[in-house]
Image (cartoon, rainbow, N blue to C red; front, side, top):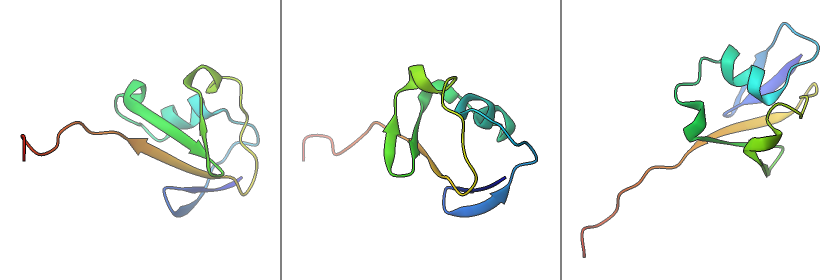
Length: 72
């Protein structure tokens, strides 16, 4: 299956895979801190085990970082 992950086309050697499985395959560190966008739509974390990816899907792993300007 061909997927575009964070802007890069990759081949996954499985025919069926969920978002949770993809996070494991890609060795995503701290998956509880990652939001996933699938074909332009943010996916609820509770659906990661339910949604099966399809050939040509586009996935973005989004990491939200804290911080900012200190009162400026």
